[in-house]
Image 1 (tube, rainbow, N blue to C red):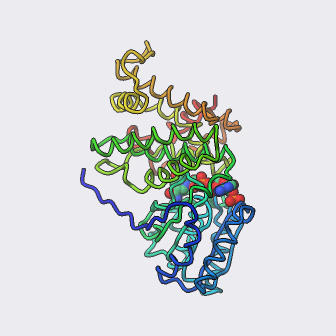
Image 2: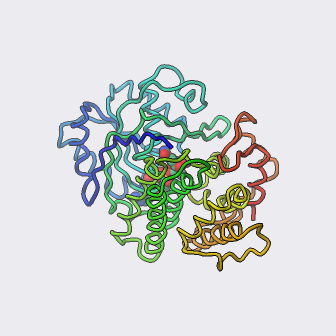
Image 3: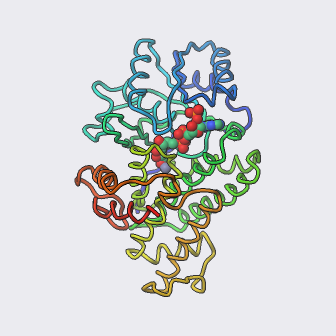
Length: 400
Ligand code: NZQ
Ligand code: ZN
């Protein structure tokens, strides 16, 4: 299929790269900076001090705003917009993970557009711009450092929504794999799942496809699986951190979707409701629902799921154990789904909502399904277009 590939983010990768933050902001023409960060990991690690020193070296004035939480909140975004207006900030620097970068992107939209920033996330209107943003990444996961999207949770109703446009793409991304060594194992592994899922979301498409795109996707997924296991044993392995960090960006900058219809994002949309209602870690939530989504839809294109089993896990027809499956492809498809769940378990990730630590009631399931379908106004996914009842059924299957 025809495609556009647009990745305007300058990547500065490697040990000590964070010391170049000030120089990179200067290069982009920033004069007054907001440094936005999360719950304190960057304070404890000393990274915030290093970044501030780098800005001071360049003579760049700045203000700081911390307190972004995972599943970042709209109220913090509003606080950031107000602060930036009062302080005449013209460049935004995110120091953190996907949540901090997404909050920064939302502040950027708020600064560059009139009216309520939530309108964009509520699909009421489109943004006409975004203030310039740079990122110093501290966790390999969401891929927000090179992606066109940001995901914000509105506390009013606990609705979690994503908004995508090229305006919010980071001008630069500083990626020092050493910064991720302080991550708790659960966050490392949750990040690895998210990275894989950004490529799997694109791999499971309904239309188009290129051999080269598939090859990149498979190499990326296999590399992340291999290095997630290494990091489980040795969290300080720099090379493994580097592999995973670069995969995080490549997985969500569009590269693994070139020549396809864009892929199937139903698992992501189903998970976002879990994040909004139960505040779970995004990647862990994805691991908990992916198998149920896959079993619900695989019969729509068993051959694609069979290719996945072959290419990612080296399985062949002899491994397809499901005698009840409708065809050899369907049998192999099921074997591939099981292999992926085995991998999740091997790195301590959940494969059910119970293992994720939540037990939604039927009423909560129906509420999440309703929100996911935007009150019946949309379906999610392309392999099988899922309405609210389909989504509710997947939550029920995932309960465990
Ligand atoms: O807040 P602090 O104290 O920094 O702690 C964070 C947070 O608790 C901690 N952490 C981050 N770097 C660390 C560290 N702890 C120790 N050492 C470090 N170096 O890790 C926790 C999780 O951080 P968060 O930023 O929430 O993680 P992630 O990057 O996984 O981002 C998740 C958010 O991104 C959204 C998700 O929905 C979720 O809200 N996504 C954004 C996307 C995008 N913009 O393109 C795409 C994704 O699919 C995803 O939906
Ligand atoms: Zn994700």
